Length: 424
Ligand SMILES: Cc1cc2nc3c(=O)[nH]c(=O)nc-3n(C[C@H](O)[C@H](O)[C@H](O)COP(=O)(O)OP(=O)(O)OC[C@H]3O[C@@H](n4cnc5c(N)ncnc54)[C@H](O)[C@@H]3O)c2cc1C
Image (cartoon, rainbow, N blue to C red; front, side, top):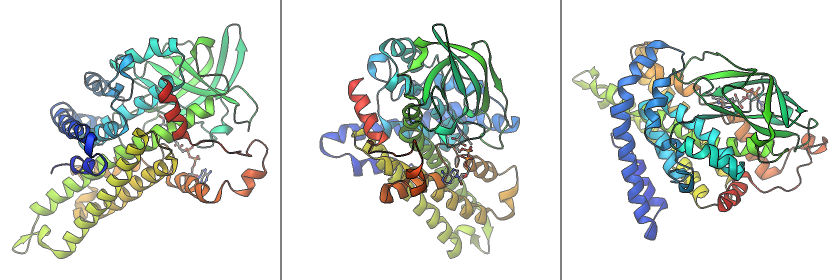
């Protein structure tokens, strides 16, 4: 079944952008061809191994240049923008959700270096990342404080020409395959918006351990724990300035994370529809197939309807980012829609597969498990709703009253992203 995305681009890109539109349609085909040739042969083996860290997918993806899809040409990247990134991630995830998750996690890790790194830091790391030789992570999540970033407990202390880091980061996407980690840790008092700082921590640093944490889906994608015990980091490895940690984390989570995860969800959703349509068209009933029954056709129509709503939400937000527009609410909306609509489609698929939805030898069981893992990263639905409410009502009263949470007017994260891109 062809992807709807190619025709969707025409909605957003007209006139002088028509050439870009054609390029994106070609990229769609390129991604599909690549995924079919290079990922399809790996997926059964990855699934059979269960939870593991897959190095082969990294090797295969390294040849594409897609890790550098947002990195400037000056640094050897493709600089294709967020719409192109979205179609790459959705296309890969349609064939292998784990491969999509792996690529997006390191695109997230590259963002802090590209947007906050010093000239020297960019010169050192970005060409390596763009060439697929260096895979970064973003390590923000605290074991206790979770999505409350300012509450994190990972500490630092000054030591000679640098800092010493102690603490744990959980659910770090690609922890098991990465060469370098963007770690956010505390350099100031709790509650203060400038109390966090971002550090580049290299894989072989003394005191850094990766602790395995098996998950129940996306087999091959690792979300392990980083344990930092007295890890020394030189000041040259500070990303941005001391105190920029919250901004770096929010940039990764809001501007890149929401859309990256929405794109993976979109790919899985499309595949759920592909597989369900195939199933009902082949399964006999009366003198025809399940696909001839009105009730069944209604479920398929619901899945398609949810898919189209997600495509509009996700590509619309990506387009706003590419235009340098302020669009934080659209990014929250994109992630929320991608998860809710995909979850609804997953229920329709379960209905139509009947008892086979529970069987390990049908694709639907794996897809539904993989889809579940897309809920938490870059914020669960409740967090997107909280942010959307704030865009209407402002911060809630209890937050306004608490010291360090006054939230004077601050431009949106997407605006800061646009400003950064103009200067890089
Ligand atoms: C597959 C996967 C990949 C991930 N990749 C990364 C990564 O690369 N780097 C990284 O740093 N982290 C990563 N994460 C972690 C992810 O970002 C967190 O799981 C997420 O931020 C939620 O944090 P938590 O799990 O601690 O949940 P909590 O913050 O404890 O929240 C649990 C629930 O409590 C409610 N809740 C919490 N706070 C609020 C609030 N303020 N308002 C309303 N309701 C609230 C919500 O219902 C929420 O779902 C990943 C997670 C997964 C599963």
